[in-house]
Image 1 (cartoon, helix red, strand yellow):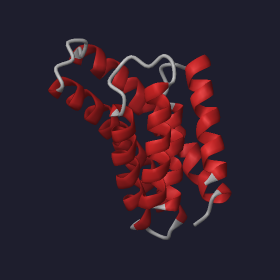
Image 2 (cartoon, rainbow, N blue to C red):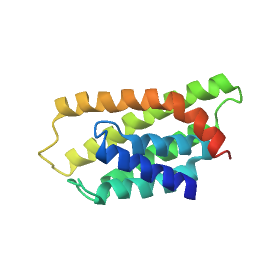
Image 3 (cartoon, helix red, strand yellow):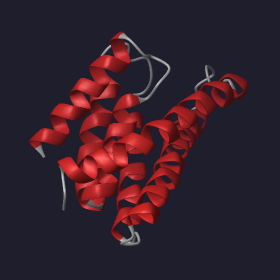
Length: 154
């Protein structure tokens, strides 16, 4: 758990300082969730989401990222538990699960924000920024799924 927390913290720091359009913390959480399972993913997702919620540049309702990360990490972890044993299929399923998890995270965050009446939600901006984030999650998943399986096996 400590290694995963350290990796997520470093990913978040790189995200905030160098690559603000790439959700590195989310991708790291989803990679560990896929390898370690839904309970581990949910706890790590909640902690990472809470970090994103309260640390600068926080501008939304506290807890939305935590909820979104937790839900996505739990579901990606559940997909990881039911994955095939074949190495090639495991990576393919991991990439698909992490891409879906990134899309689910953004949709959950935006959907709840709309339900809470936030006038700042602009669907056209969300679709373009979300597309970039989802595409980057898919590309990073190709590297992170095999790497996280070696670093943090079950």
